[in-house]
Length: 145
Image 1 (cartoon, one colour):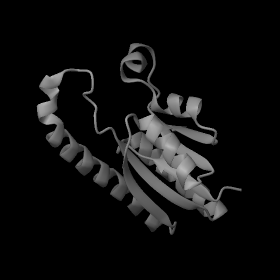
Image 2 (tube, helix red, strand yellow):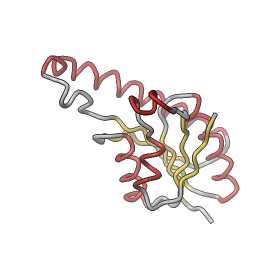
Image 3 (spheres, helix red, strand yellow):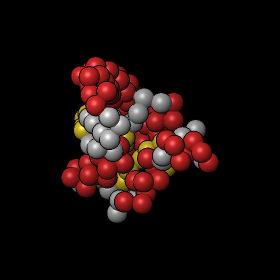
Image 4 (cartoon, helix red, strand yellow):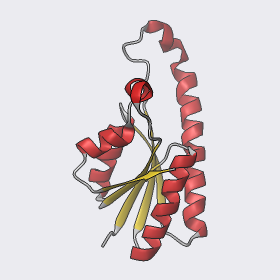
């Protein structure tokens, strides 16, 4: 049924739970898995020039965090005997990077975690899962902790 799963991770416990569900699905269907981490290279756009000085430091830290997250996810899949590719990609927003990766990679299911934010926290921090659901044509399995 599913041949290629896209699994976006962010290094959180919730995304590791999604990795576990994706592992079960990949084994059941013999599916290929691609794990991605999306970095927003310009998170300070519109905030002011005072933040431009820290851009290089931000990208260095974000890349290190991304590499650690995709490495941890890859280890989980490999231990379960699942074939996995990993990629760190850049996009203006995480949801946009996930949607574009799903389309360009030919994925047929996105498996991702959701932190379940609501109220003011959702308003301030946003919901990546909600935005992916709103903008992709692919089926999405949202996993909550």
